[in-house]
Amino acid sequence: MQYTNPVISGFHPDPSICRVGEDYYLVTSSFQYFPGVPIFHSNDLVNWKQLGHVLTTEQQLPLRDVPSSCGIFAPTLRYHEGWFYMVTTNVGSIGNFYVKTQNPAGSWSDPILVAQDGIDPSLLFDRDGTVYFQSTRTGDQGDGIYQCKIDIETGEMLTDSRLIWKGTGGAYPEAPHLYQIGDYYYLMLAEGGTEYGHMETIARSKEPYGPFEACPHNPILSHRSLKSSIHATGHADIIEAHDGSWWAVLLGVRPASYPMRHHLGREVFLAPVTWTKDQWPMIGEGGRIEPIMDAPEFIGEPLPRKPIRDEFDEAELGVDWIFLRNPRPDSWSLSERTGYLVLRGDSVTLDNVGSPAFIGRRLSHFNSRVATSIEFDPAEDGDESGLTVYMNEKYHYELAITSVKGCKKILFRRTVGSLKVEVSYDCPPGPVQLEIQTDRESFTFSFRDADGVVTVTAGTAETAFLSTEVAGGFTGVMIAMYAASLAGHSGPSYFDWYEYEPKDE
Image (cartoon, rainbow, N blue to C red; front, side, top):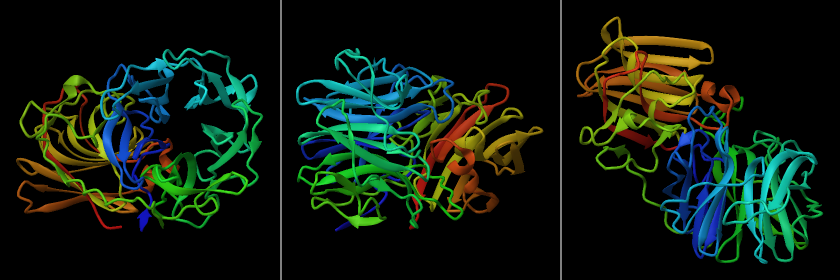
């Protein structure tokens, strides 16, 4: 049996994994999006189902006015004596903290702060009962991985922070994970930056504070300068499966075309881990991974495909849906009109760093179709509601209903840095269907009346301008329903359904 990488597609960077018996749990970064830290479950490491999110309240995850690509960086997930612990950093807000629960699909505790600075925190529960906290930081001993002991009940630092390893000399040593395996403490980290020079390195010691001996065949994972459809591999976490085999989850990117541009974001890849005779790990095949690899022997059946259409007839949103920062409570509703998602825009637009009326999901496939049915009567010029293909506040495309000189129009807009191009069309009466067809190189925007009799192509826009290489940052493209009002108070926009249909790739 074989499996296909990535095992979780779309913007899901910095994966971390833990095992409880034959159950596997995985979390990823979420940056400025809310709820934060999606959590997944699997029985075979290949087929993953999202359970929900770890951080679901504003008290756990304050994001108001957090810049794009700040917020939640690089979570680590660990399990110890009946408790799950998720430790992470809220960059631009409360810093390093962890939350805990006994039910990963349920609610998690309020944040427990840790005073050690830095990003990419991790935890090791030592066999002797000591809890070690690691993070990437700059300190008086230089840049690298720092460690302290903490009280796991309170987060209190029991020792000062100490530099334990600077890595092998690559740029940006980060994403540390300390493991106690056999007679050694293994310290694994990413180097080279999370771009195309990314790599994974490892060192070991008989003591948790070192000195650490670097692996003689570092890096143990890298796709630097390779001819491959997968690039930027790194930020890995390793685990021993219930059958005794070893595996790694890691991030990577799939550029859409040449020159290399990726817009789906950093995704989750799976690779086997083998151990040398002298007890060093190697990820993949000589530090490389492939789009198709041999599966674990315990691989199960694929999960059922998700429904294409969301009818908005449930009391709560599904786990795929996320907001841009903490949403205003009055900006959306599932109960105001039965079977509809209702949005109300204010003066916060997609061009702002703030919390617009915005509910979206990740673009997870190169080839797909996204559509919705919307009813919206703009009261004045500057009111608009529709679909956005969104990377950040400076790079996004829209297809929306708006008002131009008092006339109801369909607006197609492309925002690329300081450049903004808008085209308007006559709007059909009644409900309007908005549609976006995606492929590797472009988005095609169209609309039709409720009966679908006449389809108008509003325009196309390049995927490259929404790529990380152009737009910057650490996230990936979202396709969201949104509403905004330059006057600060738009009327309701009613979304009857939303369809996300992956195509064969």
